[in-house]
Length: 184
Image 1 (cartoon, rainbow, N blue to C red):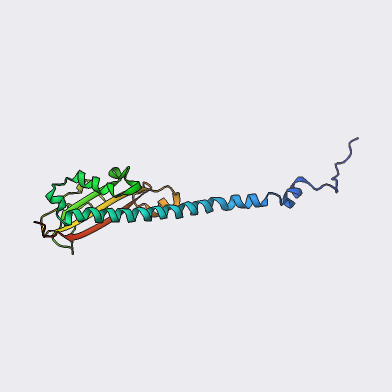
Image 2 (tube, one colour):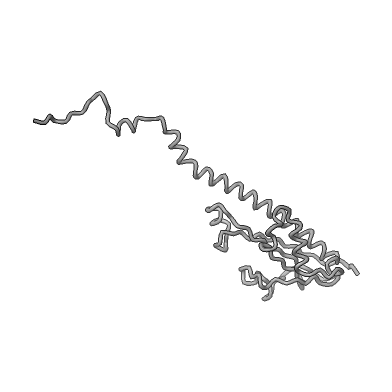
C-alpha cells in the first residue's frame, strides 16, 4: 500500500526558496537597467560626435567660402572637384569619406531675401543632389555657398528622432552668404 505524499515542513519548496533568494537580485536588476543605460550613453556620445562634425563642416565652409569671396577661386580657375577637395582637406578626421558624403552648392543669387528658385537643390523641401551648381561669380556678385553633409546614425532611437530621410542618416547643412570682394 502506498503512503500518501506529505510535504516535509523542514524543507521549503523550490518556488518558495527562489522567491526568498536574494543572491542574484543585483544582477537581475542590472540586466533590466543596463540596456536603457547603455543606449542613452551611446546616444549622448553620438550627439556629441554630430555636434563636433557640425562645427567642422561650418569651419570648412567658412574657409572654403573665403576662397570664393576673395577671388582666389576665380583667379585660379578652381573647378567644383578642386573646391570639394579643398573643403574635404579641412574636415580633419572625417576627410577620408568626405567626398562621398558632402554635397557643395556655390551659386550667384539675385538677393538674400528670396534666394531659392526652381533650380535650387532644396526648392521642393527635399534635398536633390543633382541640382547643385558651382558658380563662384564675378567681383561684387552676391554668392551663397552651401554644403550638405550626410552622416550615418548608429543609435536606433536617435536615428528615428534625427533622420528625416528614413535611412538612418542625418543631413547637416551649413550656409554662407556674402558679396564677392572687388578682387580685380
